Length: 251
Image (tube, rainbow, N blue to C red; front, side):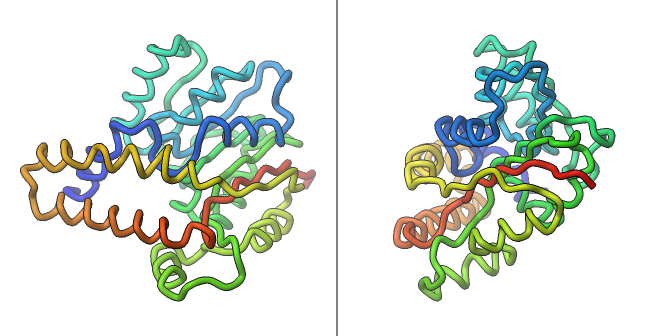
């Protein structure tokens, strides 16, 4: 529980809890063909403090249901929605992605940036599909190898942290095998990691350590994040998040 609270404290002040950017969200919206559609019902699963939810609510004629299992993140999202004048377009739902309370064929869109790994890519594709209306859209970003060959240290790190990491071709095949038509894919650019996620997090390290009196657990968390940042900076050509956009096919 202490480790989870530390993670919340480190990340709650960030605009994002993972790599991404408003431009990447908007590019995925274009691939999904959502612009101009009216009355969309969109679930943003693993929303965190609302990086994607706020862009979706700003750009689309839609009601956004922001889902996260951490109520503190959702409270921060609600505050940001009020500040941005979007409170009427976003509702929050504290829930686990493994036990979502949606009805079959309820949603026009399921969105999930950097979060599906919590349930697993294949498991998420299968479990969430039933909530989509016929022809509904799935848009998710997922840790993805950019090359067939890469340094062993990088492979060892990510295969230990997330065994489902794979090539885009493997992810696209999973989508097709579980009843989706692929509409598009693109890898996130390095600025989505360094400028939008890692850089702002590094700026929060001093205040985070001071808040927790430089405790052993707090220092260990910062050290782990710094090691991951260094690993990415050395190997950015080999790994990123891939953004996958697909349409639910008929059963």
